[in-house]
Image (spheres, rainbow, N blue to C red):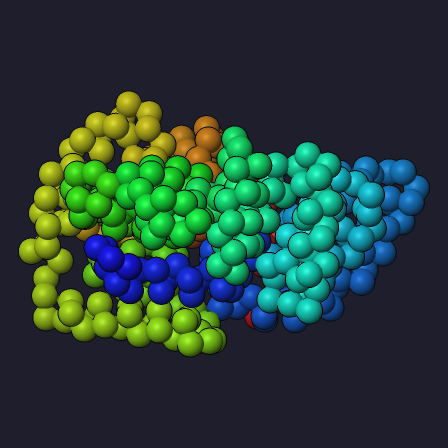
Length: 387
């Protein structure tokens, strides 16, 4: 990379190489306990499938309902999701979802070509999401001409991966004229759609003059939210501890880990409170974010709720975190990854009585919603899967 952190694209490439899932292809399969969950869940897969198969045959549930079940299980139990999607064969959504599963899941690497064909079939039928996935697929293969064709066909874009891919292409001039302003705009769009990697890339550009002016308040804001969603690059940039993740495979992934370690070494002995991100970013914008939260901005509520819940940069205050999280949960307007974390934390607070009275009914309610939005810990509770 020419003008921004030289290790940044390595991080993008590393995460992209292991991407899978629907709402967050850059990170959803990086959960450390995924293999444990899949191994345990397989013990009950047959019984679950037989029940659904019977209900579907008897006309008690629709093909769309079967696909929804596949979507619910696919990140944590891909083999069960595959069975559901095959059961609903012929349904347009099933074709697209099975294509995504085969094209991107590490569990189906031998069927990647079949996945691409299924996505192409869905794209020809007019599925814009399928075009978006194909664009992202060819982006990861460095085939930028095909990537651009499919990404253009996916407009209006609805997924963070599409915008992040285009952002990287414009930043480096791959398949399109180099345009840092467009790169920044596309990364911002991917951030607004809930993609942690897009947030981290956008935040990084905001600390430079690449494509626009320096904006430390927004850079800190997006780095913190990306870190909350598990992006270790953003966490390291804010001097926060890394979230455990699997050992990387492949040279690019190992280079990315080396880059993170290098950043940590540069930070060693330094104090975050002396950094521009903190002094000119967090401190100068705190009051403004608090006012935005009071006026109903759910993004600001999520940002401040996390700081109060974790005790990051603010004193830990569960009661205050609850006040920020409750309206977010009620509104349900933030992207799925953020809603998953909000419901997961609300469930934990009601279950343990942190900042509020213990309320099992509310805890169970938020656990179910968190599982539906993709929370692994909540999924395991709902499905009664032990370690």
